[in-house]
Image (cartoon, rainbow, N blue to C red; front, side, top):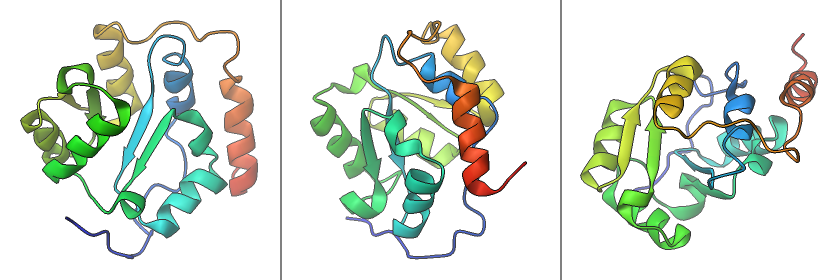
Amino acid sequence: MSSVPAGSTDTWMVELCDGAQDIVAASWSHCRVACLCNANEVQWSKVRDDLGLGQWFSHQFVSHEIGLVKPDPEIHLHVERELEASQRQISFFDDSVPNVEGAKRAGWNAYYVRGTGELRARLSELKYLRPPWPAAPDPGAVEQEFRRRLGVA
């Protein structure tokens, strides 16, 4: 089992990528959207509480909570069990080549993407993106609230 270092959050995500909310909202109506994140407790509290991302996912698999990190093969088995999904039912998108390679070795549909532009293109190509369902929050309002909480104009 791998462990998650307590480490610094200096180089870790501190704000949302442009368009991320739109992408998640456009997927809600027709598939489960889960988060598999190599975060420690400090990093995840920033993402969950300060950015409000916890509410966006049907399942959250966070390294410090499950004691596993990507690309450890055990993390893929854990996610499959929790989602009650087979390997081929899971599509995985990441900006880390080792994480994508690990997911492919686990039998997942895994894709390397750099930024939300590439993610949106890949999701569209795979027919995963559709217009958001009516109950999805307004992405602009959500982004505005995230920026307000972060003190960013």
